[in-house]
Image (cartoon, rainbow, N blue to C red; front, side, top):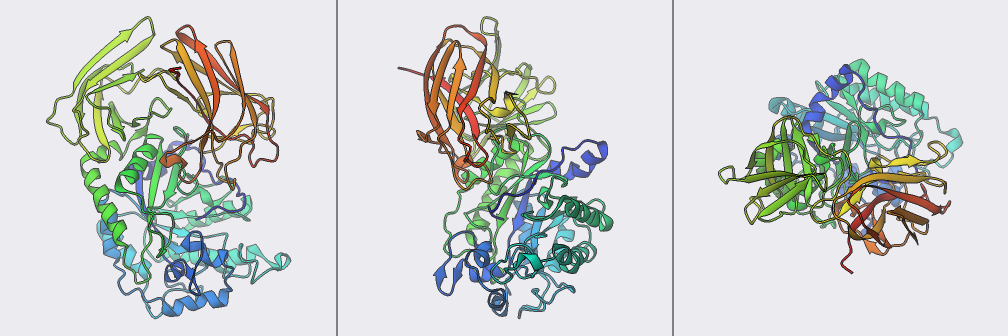
Length: 586
């Protein structure tokens, strides 16, 4: 887990056949899983020779360029006698998680199970002498919890032919990646797939050097031993069963196909003693709601300490998440994403059959109004307070071409984290297909709802999995949205740009223009306003103020975003996240 050199395509294919959909059905139903990062890096805990090493704990060996032989000495002090596999599974189940993924081998090359293919493992190289994967597999079987394994197939800083260690093994010309695959990767995958019962998925990672043929060969190798085992998109080259967004990455809107976001509770993966930047339970539940509403699974990590115990902040948060899930879990498990496909400032929407769930990360108060839902709402209920009546009023404003839903709600949220209202509809959700103004007058226009004009890949613009524009390097490219304006007036226009997964930082300086209602606004992309949201915590976003325009008539309009001067040196080009229109009081 980490950012690094530009990687090959880590997305998964969109399920095309009934067999594809059947294989992914349990995973798609789950929506929420537990990741466990645990290894020798947990012993170092973010420190080396008494110094704090910046960055995530699991990358300490790489960041500090620690010699492999020296790093291996950590194994002599690794004796996690407090490890309790049953506790891990119980915490996951009680939190409402539906699958568990354990790090069998991370980039450091150390195996967290008894591997006949290598003595560099927790049974042979440590005083612990137990196989935690065997214990975890038994606990998962007893609970009925699907178990998957993380396996670093490309990077191995301990093996001379693995990718990543250029301080011990600097001569790239003598490296033989096929030899590494044959000597270590395949034998260990065979062990994991044949010694521990049914495995739900193999979570590969960081496909820096692996070729498409090698990715396809590994996929076939996994299927040979367990045909139903899923393979994550980070096997590389677009051959996985489902896609993997960046670590802690949240897309702008609903994504096509099957996707997952791996995420941390604090800032690091493996245990780091100085990382106290724990996300609150409220933030974690906001992220769960937002990702589910965008059709993305949430794989939330814990990092056991070197003694094997789980940090108390993780236990506390998982317990509180579980309390929320026991009441509100039907709005998460087995749901489909937001039918409007664009984000709402107040929270998220999910669907299950004829039920539309409103997940409020910001409670609206006693009156909530939604534009664009065409169904009849037969009944509304608060999941956390089903005894409180929710009054419904629906109308059609012909002049503004708006379907309007009004709900009378309690003044305060029924839940301190995320309040959920379930709307029982007369059929599956039917919504206005156009982006349209909500009652506050704002519109957030994301690239996936626009038409892309001009050159397309490989010469021109495409959409990254996160929903940002990528490879926008041609000034002839533009985005066009058809939008429904309900209330004529003056609107401030902002262009939000973000940070692409493979870019080292946010980049501005591009010249752009926005055309709407006969007016043209021009500006250079600049960090006028930092976006403060969980989505922008790890991938920064900034809003550029373009100016204001007057829209004199209600109805359908076109808004066009043009490139006027794209900086060709920017990684990935112009990375547009959204265009925002908001009422201008001046």
